Image (cartoon, rainbow, N blue to C red; front, side):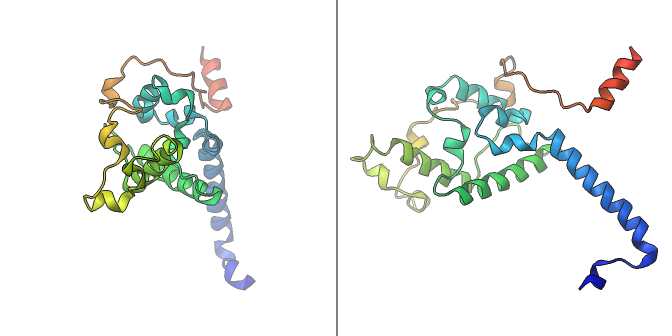
Length: 192
């Protein structure tokens, strides 16, 4: 087994350099992307990527702000493993799109997210809606035309009617940490 992992002698130095570069780059990306923040439920994490600003601003001015954070609505709560598996998948997709500049101007929820949000609407508001037939609808009923999603009627909850980057040009956001490495800061200060 060990002989298959070990590169041939003439390749050891290039493999060590590439491996070191890969590990170093991974550590650097982990730090500058503020990756540990994604383990929390802090709503400010969602604006690490500037494209989420309209969603953050609309949530911040909604009644949901007092009772629910982003993860309360957009992450499954059936068990801890499913929650973090879903967060990791979403996070990797978001980071990839943002890094490659493929983010859309107007964000639309994905199919998996629709089911999660619908289930969380029912989870939090089920006691109010227990006598309403809509509470028993699931995503399959909606797709077959035999039901509606909660936001088919409650269209502006909690993100409002219009939400794109151009809809919140002057929004006041929490101060973001500047992720400039120390060695770059020193070089900038030395040039002054």
